[in-house]
Image (spheres, rainbow, N blue to C red):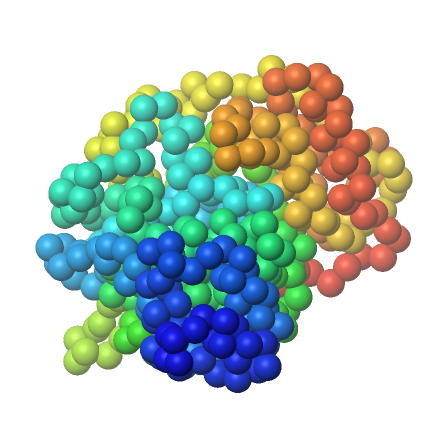
Length: 442
Ligand code: URA
């Protein structure tokens, strides 16, 4: 440990000094091996929360976490592979749409996704709500699926950045989750291990994001882009607004149905706009024109729009579901998805404009309805969730339906409805329109 004793590194960080490469690398190796006890690592995490880390320390921490497990080799798949990662949101079904769009434009998508975390939903849970869809493919099956269809989305392998798994569990119980450097290292260690050549980060900001303030979101985006650069992978970030749920559906079946609608050209405008922007950015990272100049963001968006509007992206999604064992009858006839047994409408209490939505509250209410996990062992009710009927800036009259809560038990639905009531603020003044794509950092 440089000087040998981990306690000295803890003191050093506590006093605001930078740790050496050797200290950081040894810390991760020894922690994963069980040589550093949780109480000491907790103290170190808390010191990092207060004192931060410079870019060099952070890149070293992230690459050490990446190297704690398997680093996926995607070289058997031809072409530039671009990964996309969202820092979390409510109603965020973008991967289900963006992945097929990008694949339909000839850029391979070999993606490892995660499950819901806290009040946010996860792509894997959404995909698993399609009957028989397999999110655990062997390495060979995964590579074959991408080579044949251009796309596969699976769960993270067990041995992907195990240091992050252990550290995340410790952060969760020591009040050290919401630290920008620790979040940046956690996300980027997994992205770097997942093997793509380039990375696009969708950094959400606002009331439904982990980091809610714009300065913090910029800081997180910049730190992750710097880590990517430090680790030799081109990385860009798009700051997107989570000041209201994305689209009109929150909850697994409801979101898959909305993704299908969007891929068929009938989705909500905000979902389409974000998906075309993300896909456009991924294409501009991956593709070059004659003369080896990169595709511009606008050119990427145009290619993405063509793939979406021609139905080629929908066909890719359907192929992916079929290849991964999912029942495509549900894709062709989404009315087959199980419906919630109990639904209750949330009515506006007054006339006026919707001036603010507490998006995290929508995620929490969806969790109360059964759409998320309360404990690690909880099973998800795929038909549960919320249909969002009115969004920020719309004028409503007293009694208008603002949202519909869907669940399986009446008392659960009543509780979620009461909670949701306080998550929508109605006022006399029309608010400024929300800007969905806040900024791009590359
Ligand atoms: N997502 C992660 O993977 N890690 C964090 O620390 C926060 C969100």
